[in-house]
Amino acid sequence: MSLKQFKFAKIVTAVLVALIVAQNVVNDEFFIPIVVVALASLVLFYLKSRVKEVVVDERDYAIAGKAALLTVQIFGWLAMVTVFIFYSQQEKNSAFAPVAVTLAYATCALLLLYTLIFHFYDRNSAKYEK
Amino acid sequence: MKNKIKALRTQYNLTQEELASKVGVRRETIVFLEQNKYNPSLKLAHDVAKVLKISVDDLFSFS
Image (cartoon, rainbow over all chains, first blue to last red; front, top):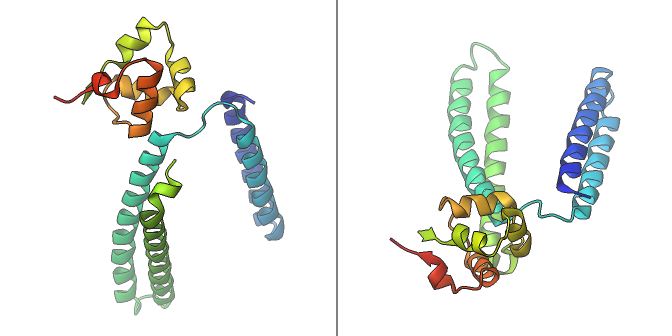
């Protein structure tokens, strides 16, 4: 399979998944979307393994690393500000407090996960370098 | 950091696609390398130098 065919297959799969998920969510059906997303991931993983050309190289990994770091930093700051705003405004709307707490825990989980993965690669960088 | 990749690739009648395939990267990476917009890993620099039959030291120059 060529890279061009893989990219086309990826777009077709994304459109099909979006259609099926949207249709089922509207109908309050949540099991089918999970199965469809999992199946689509497996199909794309299989198709990617069949591509003979290079799909991702060291430059992509370098860019992905920088993008991930910047995303985490921006999201962390934005989430922190949002949490403070929502928490300070909880008297105006009772829904603000749970949203703020959920966002705060989600941000902590993301930062914890990032730190764990960072330390994993930091200790094993020679083994896992691509 | 500057390099002679484009000149040597042309000398050996290699396309960017062919060089990319030989060293196991995407064509875009070769484009960025030739434009001195990407600093390659030591492994990639070694692989490119090997394909272009030159030493890494001669292929890349620091200014």
